Length: 477
Image (tube, rainbow, N blue to C red):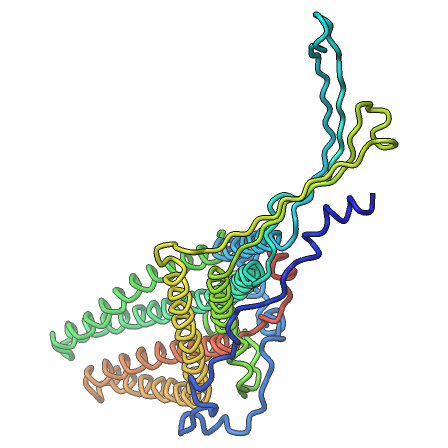
């Protein structure tokens, strides 16, 4: 029986180990090894590098409401569900391709009972035949590494899809925070517009009374009404934006966000996000999920060249079986006679109309494409990080200046309004002061939003939280 078993398993022992894949080297020199320098980056010089990939979003998002909204998004986002489904599909396809590295072994028992003439008169005889076999059908010896290359190609595709899912997860996180902050900013702007409209309404009424008393002119009344109507238009506009922001937030989260988890204003959220040192290492860029995805796609294309090269070499296929046969079922596994078959075949490509040559050229061109795609991914990562650093290096100064500008504009408006109400100055100066204050307050809201947005942007461009294991990624669904 050992000889019969060897006959069945011999193909598994003859798998090839030759690889025709080109030697893989990571492309270099797409960007400078030094981060940009200049006035915008001066305050960040000497900042220690931080490992954002190991920093979970739960440790980065500090606001309790926002943390719950992010958790909802990572659980319900349809974009993330699509990405995870793609990972599962790619893993299954890798399993299918990997199965070609092993022989397909099957076992079966068959029996035949027949009646036939014996050749002596009309006498007949009944015969029985039983057999039990183990067999390997059409197993291709991978002498030139074709199946190994195809398996590596599919495996790298799977790894690229996995990194794509991590990138999607990070994008869902970023978009959730972005829309939540946008809603907070527009709610602040809506409140400012309502306050300005109410102040303008009161000024309009005062100006109308002064005109009735011969103190103010129709020009002053018209100017006051213009300010009021303009503020009313802003109220309507920001009301629309607030509603649209909520709709956008619901879409990225994947379900309706409860009102108690929505921000009241940009001023009310405090320290919503953790401020981590903004130092950058070169490894951080190369370990971003989108960059890793591009590299896995390049490795997959590299392996496909090896498979294309193997098409030029002979293909050897083995079919074998071994077992026992007997005319009596009861003695099949005791006294049965050994039966076996072995049918090797070899196929040598001679003429295929140039298919193999064309396919090899195609795989090489695809590798060139993915080299360029990888280098572009690295360049994009460099640009995004540089932009985030430039914003990080100046945002605190801008925020402080805007806060002082609002304080100064508030004082200016208060004094100008007093002078107008006491008849010392014209309404034009009060109107100018009111518009200046309105602009200063809305600019402060935009700067506060930019401050928080820069924090979550830096977390995203640095690949924050993407060092999680595959099982952790899948468990989010």
